[in-house]
Image (cartoon, rainbow, N blue to C red; front, top):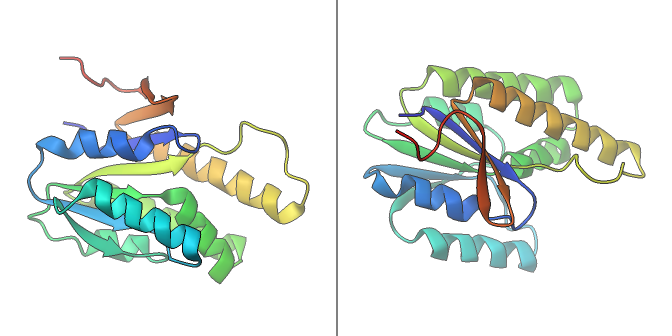
Length: 177
């Protein structure tokens, strides 16, 4: 069984749906949501995601301190879905806006998922495959998102890239004996 699964891909590529499918065989599930309802559109997205996952999950809403949330998970939890790291990183940029402190949050989070007994399915967007952003802050965010994904992929047992709703195995073995 894979302990850390990273699901990455573009917007609307099927990442969340794949994560829910992946977790279907588990009983005690937690969904760690990083999004905050900052406007009506985001509120609608959050409600849509809640509807998709139904009542199978205990939901924890944590926009900033993922490391603490992960470290406090009960040992009875079989699997935790974290959706999504890109939104979490955006929250850190918005509320902390200090690259050194953000890097500390990232490393602390990675340490805690590696030390946890829980299995994790971590969702993150792959945003660095397009044009170079026009402003410095956007470039800094893009670079940090790429570094975050790279660090998670290094410790992950399974890395799936979602493309047009199809899972492509990048690291590990999915669906094979």
